[in-house]
Image (cartoon, rainbow, N blue to C red):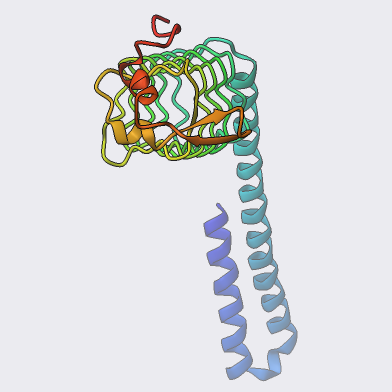
Length: 224
């Protein structure tokens, strides 16, 4: 209907313009036609704007409702945000088995003590993410960027971390961080540990203390 009215308005305006050129003595009729045409065109523009605004508000309300449900839920197996923005959502303590965060922007997102067994974080942006005490057992971290992520007491048993693009540069770990067996040494040594006497984070030592992290055998939380 809006398209039809738009066409009629345009035809009326064109017809008025042609009459103005060929029959200037019919000025009143031309003004009426021009007014009708202009009014229809203006009405169509307003109608389209109103429809667009209504659709935008509808989508915003749906997103707000979805976000609210996620924030109050304690167990969300198979969670998949898709293209939705999850920044600012607090996932701490939630059970998110087999969640799919592929390619998600998780910079600074909180996952403290979250159960993320089997979750997929392939190519996710996880810079500065809070994963203290998180259970990432059997999770996939192919291509994930965990630069400056907080991984103290995190369980990475069985996690896929040896992809070339996966990085733990300056990630914060401690003696309770559980690494997967066979993890590349360079990934572990790219992380940092808090050195109490220096009151700052330093790279994980190459040896002999660093070897205790490989395979996670020294971490008491490896059997989560």
